[in-house]
Amino acid sequence: MGEGAFSRAAWRLIPFMGLLYVVNYLDRVNVSFAALTMNRDLGLSSAAYGFGAGIFFLGYFLFEVPSNAILMRVGARRWIFRIMISWGAVSMTMAFARTAPTFYALRFLQGVSEAGFFPGMILYLTFWFPAATRARFNALFLGSIVVANIVGSPLSGAILGLHGLWGLHGWQWLFLIEGAPAVLLSFSVLACLPDGPADARWLSAAEKAQIGETLARESLPKEDLWAGVINPAIWILGIADIGIITTHYGIGLWLPLLVKATGLTAFQTGCVVAIPYVLALAAMLAWARSSDVRRERVFHVVAPALLAAAGLFAAGHLDGGAATIVALSVVVVSTYSALVVFWTFPPSFLGGTAAAGGIALVNAIGNLGGFFGPYLVGWLKDRTGGYAAGMNVLAAGLIVTAFTVYAFSRSRRAPAMVG
Image (cartoon, rainbow, N blue to C red; front, side):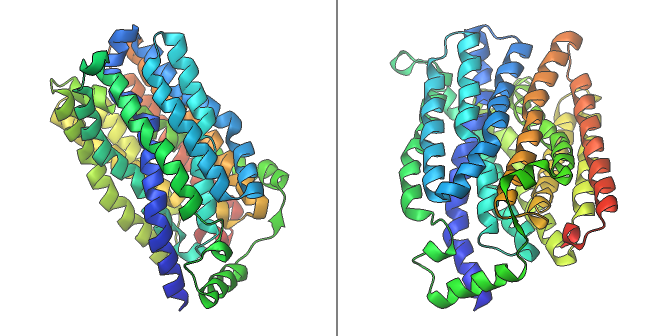
């Protein structure tokens, strides 16, 4: 019955949560496809685009911890509703950017609006599923990022083809069409996302009790928010996360431009960009299962991080074309594989509101890489004329991540780090 209760919860929650994250991720990164024509229309240089793409994460960083604290206070249902309707509205407003400063301001405001969604979802999963299976459930949820790229890349390329319809540019249609689902789906959150097992009408009393008893056996001390924020382990994990996220967005927000430079159309670019993400979806699910079955976390983060660093170094020193795309595919697959296991760490030693603050802070620190990654790649490209220097910087960040996670695990020597 216990497995049945968790399985039932997974089937009811994770597909819906995944759908929300698909919409979230599309609205966060569709700027990479908009850039194919928007940069020219707004007069943005590579550095200016990279700055605008990345400033989103500064807003995200500033409001991440307060947002998760509010979620713990008012409940996931109402707070996720607020996050979604506000980010959708701002995303649609991006269609009306006319100057670089307006672009920067709206991207920053979008980050403020979205702050707390991802860490809120990671925290929410801990309300339902035990630690021993958490990598797999993380992978099922985080797989929606990959789905967003698989579906969103060709879709975004196709939407750009609406250029001229009703007097709007293709990139304006992109923001309008892909922002609207967040506003519409926000209302379904109120009906479909219970605050916890006790509020789930589709669970029997026995199933609610089984989930509660299972989670109670592994519960950690319920510390306050401040305990999570000042925990040194959280700051170290945040530093480790920077390397992953710097690469994640440093590549993700530039990949369409890198691929289109080979001479493809916008739609062809979208189809090619989707290929690495198809591979990543299969790899991250298998890698997460391996981590859970072996009850091992550290190697499952360190190994793919180092492999991704090697892929970046190779991509920076190849002459472009198919070989570069293969190298970048290795980077995408490896980065996602490291990410799904990495997020088992923070909930393994924090409980209660401390977990809300700690998870949010790790994500907030890590998301600074979302600013630095796109900006550094653009800044270095403007100064060197190519992407090699940017790839090398991203590779160095992943090497730091690998050694930080390894050294951290050795210093703690805690069973929770591999549980």
